[in-house]
Image (cartoon, rainbow over all chains, first blue to last red; front, side):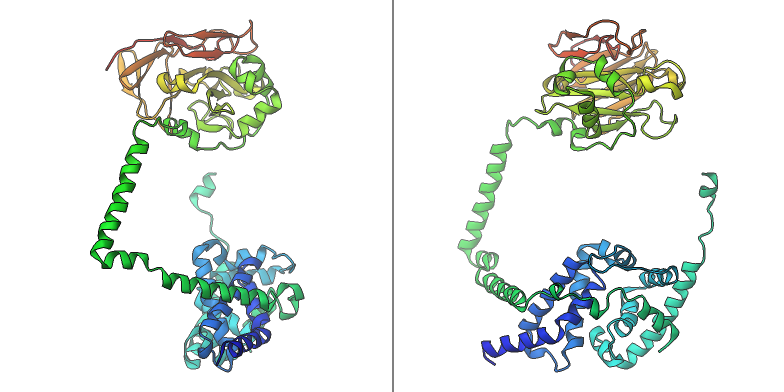
Length: 173
Length: 311
């Protein structure tokens, strides 16, 4: 494949999947970071164009996930989902009902891997097979993980609902 | 799909349809990033400096020579260089927090002339300066009446040549609740050079806080030591960020040793209230040649006695 063909393929990939990659990143990071992630993903895609499978979306989202993790490692503050959601990203006014808010809090309490298992299917609309490719595991393993993640999310919801008991220090104040 | 999955879908903050046309960068922008990344990668491959340097004997010699030259340059440049003000007074590296109330600022300004008033021309300017001043805790009022009390401020003139210690809410008679007129207590100023050789001491009457004794605050340069002598007992005073504070009886003496020279200050407060001023402000020069601009009633009331000698 010569340079022109490679560029044409990358452009086709971009036209087909850039919106989904951008939305994926926007759901997990602020606007500027999401734009950086999008750019990083297609830089990687260019470098490894021969490795991009025909069903490219899970591969691209896998790149986006790793890029996001790198950004989040650099800036831990961005890793808190609840903060991002309540931060009211410009251009996407959010109205979170109290019932929904506790779910967001519970999601934020999950480990990133557990959360991704649930969000990749619920938010990104991926099939089990596609989500498994994003996370680099088999579809069977993903099903097991999804089951465990749902259980942990239910536990987290209970924790959110349970009021924190007053400590002696609080009483003294 | 489970109910939980449906709920998760419901909290999806951004749907695909929420993406606006201008949210998505043009492919040309991404293509530019691709090209830049490719160029950077080629440059990184082209200049393997360290590997080249360390794989040949000549490279080792060149590297050792470069490091040696750098070390010599650092030694030459640092030799004999005077420390910066921030090195001499670590507190200058800190910024202050907002003060909660400006009550009494006008009194502080009216009560102090000299250096402070010349570079802070108005009440508003003083308030502004105090908001960005270098703050430090002082013992008095630690338990009294909420936040903001028991803090002092170190003001630095715009050109960095002058320092003023401002103690807050000290020196007032009466209950802590009626401290409006004494929101800012003793204010003492000196030049940066004098502060580096002599230190700077302010003393306030903390009786309003039912504190047994006077509050002292000393600004001392790095490497100085501070000793409090009270009833014949000498005790070292801890220094935090170049500020030593404490409470002592009016007969106590504070000794600051800087480079083998000891300055002693008796921690007596003027019997007159620092506010309102009873006479025009004065400026006095002590034996060491340092000028202390003071308020009309000698704001700190500090009696400076100097005993020079090595300890």
